[in-house]
Image (tube, rainbow, N blue to C red; front, side, top):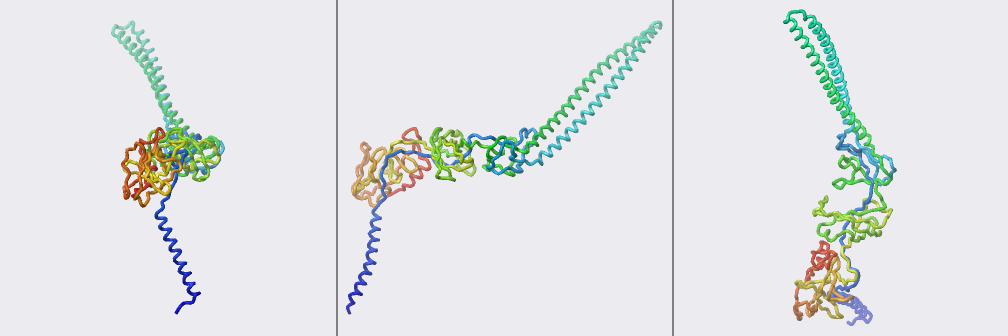
Length: 468
């Protein structure tokens, strides 16, 4: 039984709605499979950059330190009991921090006791000396009287027998010698007493000086601002900031700093592979992580000669200081920066993305689109950065190249550079394997063909995966 004409029209229309989208999808799929993304060679300034993260700090600052002479007071570990919040604006003389006095108080009591003991010893030495010298003077007076008696006896024995006279003379001579010896001993005892007094007096002076130092150091446990400014905490050896509970030692007495915000610098650390590319005077572009829209410029002022092992880092790094050119009152110490250090620049270079460069052995080439045809074009490469490579020969400005190897390489001819000495062109059906070309970076002193690529550059080359 034939269908009504209206119903037949509905069925035909529905079939068309199903077939047309399916055909469009199949055609689009076939078109996408046969199409590769292309880019054009462009001329312009080519820059080789080393990117790194850093931290802002003031180039000049005033240190807020703990009490001086703490080592002389035997105060080797002083704990911060309180400190004003970081970022506080203080005036000269304002209290910034307080140190725990418990250890220094015990030391003060010990020194006071030592001084009391030394003063008692001095008093005892004075009494002993006075007593001994007084007794010596009394003995000399007795000897003088005895000598006078012996002299009288000698004069009276002049009329006696010779033996009696001689005995009187001997007694008189003994008395003279005893008195002379007593006078010499008195002088020695006086000098001995003076030496003892100096010794004990030195102990007293030493104890008094120690007490004075301890008292001065104890007063310094209240730390005042030496100038006006913003309080910024300093970092310990492990990277942590000193705050309440942190230790202050005589060898590292700084508690905080008062930075000069008119001149800032960024401190960054660069790995040992890239640091040889960086030199003093290299221009730098900086951005703030807190405000990516703010753009700053600077230059490298210092590159460390010796590497160091930073906490939580496996490789050795070198400290690099970058001076910020523009004074900016919104900059604060401790802000994180992203720095792009320009190590090499070519003012008018022809470059293409790294992904577009392949290699065949040691010969770099690109797949160039020439109208409706695609050819394998041999090129000579130069300097490179993380994303692009300079083309020295083989392409001209606006030349269109593929970013990936075409899926069908059959029938693609190879165009060699003059004098390259390459192999002859492959014929139809050639399936020579292609892989990314090992282009080389630069150090800013030449064309960059004699240096190994940086890790970032290696990552860029890894993006051009081995293609067939």
